Length: 303
Image 1 (cartoon, rainbow, N blue to C red):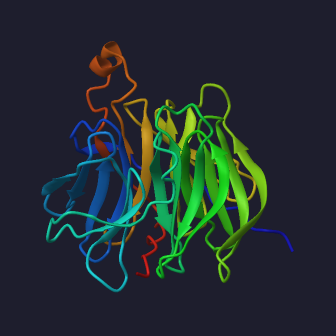
Image 2 (cartoon, rainbow, N blue to C red):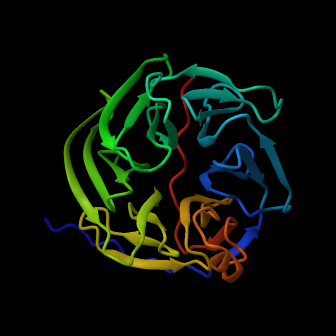
């Protein structure tokens, strides 16, 4: 039986909805509960909230880097990754975040970066070398019962993960080396196996940053240094289309809106020269793109 080839999506043009000028925008998350888009400025140590229905914007400041987040399934607020580990934070109360677990006390030069929840309610997140050089980063799974498991290691910069539409494959980025790996994912056991190279970025494409999966199973990948988001077949990795951005460092993306037909895209200012910043005034902004097909709802943390 032949596998049906995913159709080519038709994205609209990207437009900036929040020109906040983030140093390192990341962590895009659509909240079905609030109908808003959360995202972070890692180096600016801020959490942003954007309401596309009203245009209202709100922000929270932190004492250390905040990099990724997911909504909690059975309680208000969010699970987040701060510089040193997993924590809880409730934007409604705005109190201090409460650390749950810090898995790398012996690696003070590391910090957490990208992360997401799987469909079973566990939060997957990667660490990285703050200087983006040493291969000291790892991929962790944090479970609602408080267990934390290391699944892979040896990365200078980690990004992703995202899953296939059927939940059987996890994709994870080795950003510095321009590679995206695929793993077989056992959802019942929460384990990974059969690591293989899924896509290697060509010279001139930038490097793979954050990514997400749509309802058709296609992967949407942000290109750091590549000024775009590209869409790919989940099996062959063939590029199906791309969304150009008016700034070089494109960092993350997530589907949102009432029907999940808007692709929200974060970007960054850090690493750009003064001349590049002058040419890219919207660098660090949050962008939105109308899509002709929906995305997948974000996984909720089970704790």
